[in-house]
Image 1 (cartoon, rainbow, N blue to C red):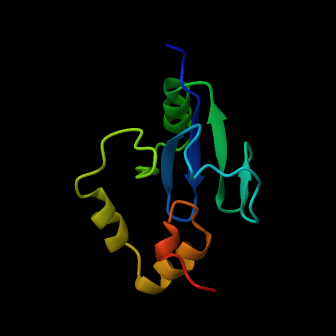
Image 2 (image 1 turned 90 degrees about the horizontal axis):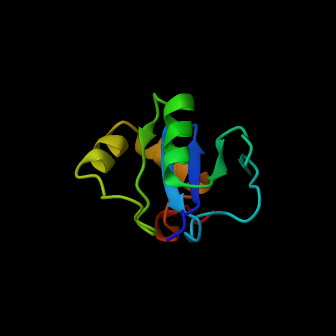
Amino acid sequence: MGEKKMWINIDKPTKKVTLHEKHCSFVPTTDSKYKKINNMGRDGGWKEFKNREEALRFYGDNFPEFKRGFCYSCGTEEPPKNEVKLYYDDISEKELEELRKYDSNTPWSMRSKD
């Protein structure tokens, strides 16, 4: 069995890093206004790695203060038990609405209708 390529979504506004499998539906195919692919934009970026270990090493070396996110689409690991609730408790409803406009990890059903 070969190594699985992995992606990391680095989200600066929320200080969160989320691992995704290569074919996850959340992995973008083009740059967005504030997030770049294999580069960093104002709000972070997406970076591809040859395997999970390399991705985790990059995360630990470069963003140790960021929380780990969980992808409910590709499920690269066990979902957090209460981390999601704690994460949202730290953000006001107005800030959360603003983040939903730009955060590619927010399901479409929760995004702003703007």
